[in-house]
Length: 88
Image (cartoon, rainbow, N blue to C red; front, side, top):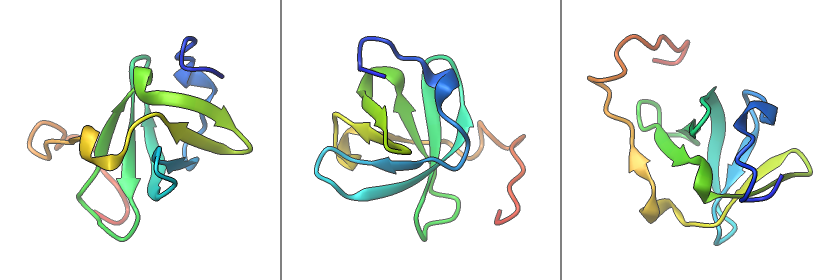
């Protein structure tokens, strides 16, 4: 998948997500047509929203981003209270 396709439906829950600088950010916990939600490694309740346009590639079982963590938006816990996670 290239950045032009934005085919988020092909990305399974649990897929590792790597920032442009090579750092592992976490893993996919939600897949939506225009964005992904990832749980950050070791940081429960600190999920990040990844817009589809920030996906550089989905290959070798990983999502590689075209941006670093600082370019991503933290998920507002109040707005996503409906989500129930085992580690929440």
